Amino acid sequence: MAKSKIAKTSEKVAEGVIGGYNKIEKGVGEGYKKVEHGVVEGYTKIEDKFVDKYLKHESETIEEAKERLKKNNNI
Image 1 (cartoon, one colour):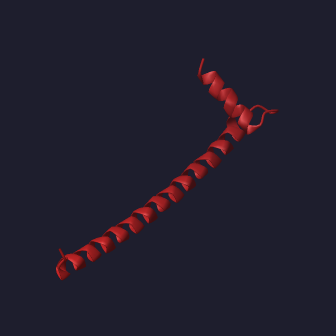
Image 2: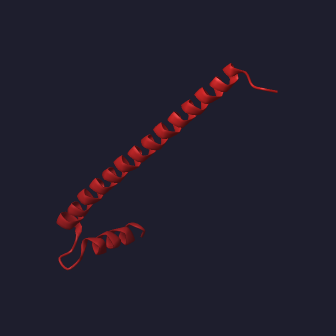
Image 3: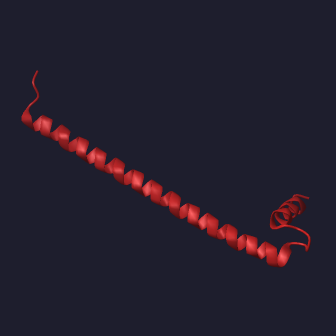
């Protein structure tokens, strides 16, 4: 049975809407990931500076100080 012109047009519109939605969804997801990465990176920089200035011992690296602090908190 042949589809009517209205049914064919309706299907084309639906495909267009779905395609547009998928593009928007992908763009929003990628934007969120970029923002999330920026926030985490900024927090890590602040955390490293704090550990460097206030919590690490003279001969330690920042990473060693963080490990020592994690280890001491698990006791």
